Length: 101
Image 1 (cartoon, rainbow, N blue to C red):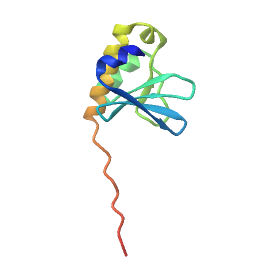
Image 2 (cartoon, one colour):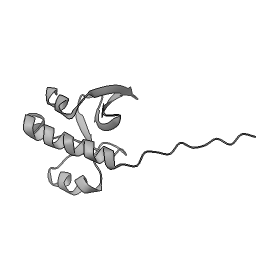
Image 3 (spheres, one colour):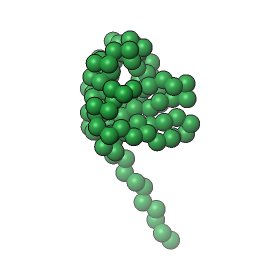
Image 4 (cartoon, rainbow, N blue to C red):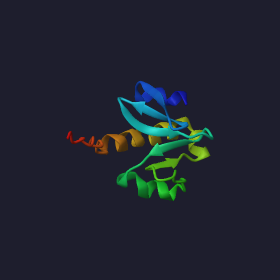
């Protein structure tokens, strides 16, 4: 996973028993409890990743990275760069305002 440092400052944060990976405050990946890497995808990446037979992770817009990609530093960097771009294109969630009564 050292290859990911080329993306910038990569940070992790625990999330419900898993770990989110962030670069520039954008969550681009998830490391699940079984230590599998799942990359965030969007409509631009989804079709390409389906051809790579990536497994979808629950209801989240993340797909498991195939072992062949994990073992190829160049491919892993390319895929994670795409994931960071997808995270940047995603609209931030709006906070719900609480009405005070």
